Length: 61
Image (tube, rainbow, N blue to C red):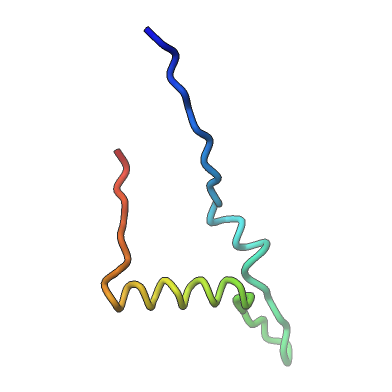
């Protein structure tokens, strides 16, 4: 039996968005949660794909 080859896949953990994609800004003693421009663009892309029906979900096998 030949050994199985495993190809590594880069996965981004959603919790990493808290450090890199979401910022908190204090305005008049109120903390506002804001998305970075990169995360906002990604969210808008996903929303556009969802609205057009071109967003595909791959189930776990």
